[in-house]
Image (cartoon, rainbow over all chains, first blue to last red; front, side, top):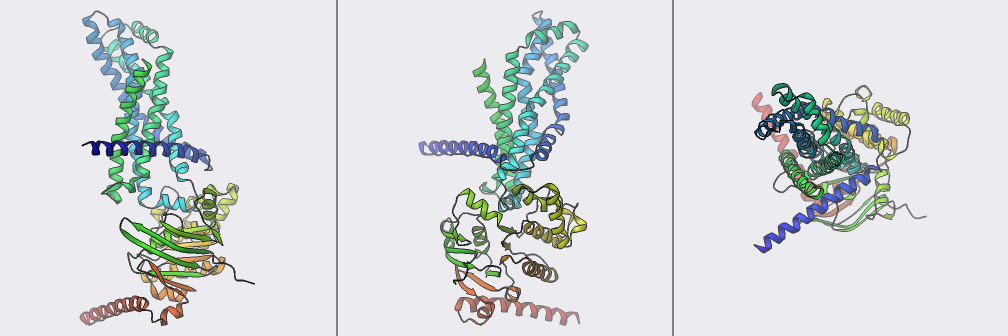
Length: 258
Length: 264
């Protein structure tokens, strides 16, 4: 029992060390590659433009549900006027960064893990190494770096659309005054809330994209699977681990910032 | 005046996967500006040796010397080695998200400071030489197997390496295409004068095109020398390898003969 707990702990610490080394080596390797702008633009489109529709849809429905639930709860206490506060703080502090990260993991992170896994499987990564190209810098760094602006921007879009959804259900459908709703939004959200939101988005970006790239890059090391099964296992593991990491990091950051 | 050292030399190279020792003290010299063919049984460690020579796979012990200098693990040494060495993968390993031209431009873009128009001109010249000029906009998936092989060769040649390593360049090709690939390698080697190291199963072609033939058996090089010596040697391992190839050839011919008889 103690031996297996020890073995799991050692494996976890080793894995964490390997992951941190991977992220640092990718960022360092970025400086060793050339013609970076096209790759940065491609990664921005890959994560940004392609994921925008799903962010807008999920943000809209999240706001609608928050407005609906919040209105009925607040009405019991005669506090419908605080609906804007409830919707805005929920979106800015928690739901915006977390749900955006989860959507980006599902849409872009899984695709990135699969693409890098296939490149490993078909020896494209070995070919890059044989040409003397820094594979971390070439394949991983542009995706990690573009995530640093894509995640916060997508989070901002999610929050904006969510506030609109809250207004639609709370004001247009259920009758809270427009001015009351928007005024409570403006009064509730402070600069510290925006900082927390932005910080979370940045941490989630590095964590989730880093894990997805890491799993794809090491698809050939997965035990008991090879070829397309290894790519499939790496993609599944990438999505599960990054979702868990985002939720765990969210708890840690929230408890430190409150 | 002493002769120049071999371009690449392996000394006592060992590599094991768990308990299975694949390379057990490989000594091999790859002479400059010549074609060396490495023969051996399937699963005998030829591709492992090739990847160790290219420093794409770490080996457990032994030494590699390139151009007379010990090739250590320092990043700068490895980077300098890779600038002078190309590798042609069995499955071509072309980047499928890039076009043919972008694939050929890639090594120059990433490892040199050449201006973009110079890189493009060189890549287009390499494609033209290998009769792929008209297909520069195509992605690898849109090209035939033979064209992909030529594209991979164009990518390997564009940075003008001194040493080019080939991992079974004719695997999975029909006899006509196999001959065409070997002819292409010989033609390019004669034109450019690079050192070629080819892992192959094809004993006939190896004896035809190679200046030096090496046989890997039981994790060791049991023969390294001229093709004439290979064909005539009475070394038991060589005899066994030649006999296995000849009996395969005889069996194939017998099968063809039987098929013709049945059809007639």
